[in-house]
Length: 308
Image (cartoon, rainbow, N blue to C red):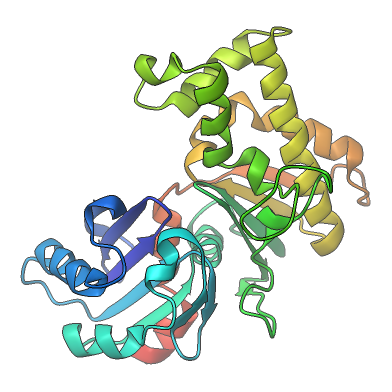
């Protein structure tokens, strides 16, 4: 069995998975409940030990946002909670503690690998996976092989394509980044400013936003939905023009509300993207949800190599 860990911007998801891709157990840790920086790894190990409850994984795969060095299994750069791991010798620490092979990769790349092997990416020649969560992740796979460049962030920064050079300032240093308009963080900014009542109506105010906006037509709320669709479509068109995928899988927490916005995004993309024929690129929802990145890490090619 394999232990897969998905280190996100808000939560850490855990999965204990057998060799047939069945989940034996799973859990969710809240990042805010762990100590930042000093003591973080030790506290994480304590939580993992509790989750494992005496079970011993044969291998461990950790997915995290930000830039990673696959060869050294190190996080090279990140913002927010992700920088708790930057520069740490994670392979040495994990393998010493758990006595099992350890690998590391970016979470969006892991999500793409999971969807390609087990989900909505099956059969795609060129696959892009975009995850709409706390931030926006992106990965590119060519016939199942994840793209990597000389830069650890190569192929991952779809959320930092600028759609407005005079737009909102981004933590990356640029302006008008797609992430500033379509991530869960961006949507919470809109909701808290204009529709704070949604927080008392549901445990998922983002879903409430999309559900009500899709029913409100030409109202200001309906216009917010249209703007969201325009922004996401513009970002996807840029990605299509750069990579030419035949399929794009949309994942992450925001994708749980995709029934309210994805059809409109597909229509916009078909009008704007210069493909032959027009509308060639299919945009679909994740089939695996949060399990995609966990499965991607549990059956990552690097992990298979370490186990062979």
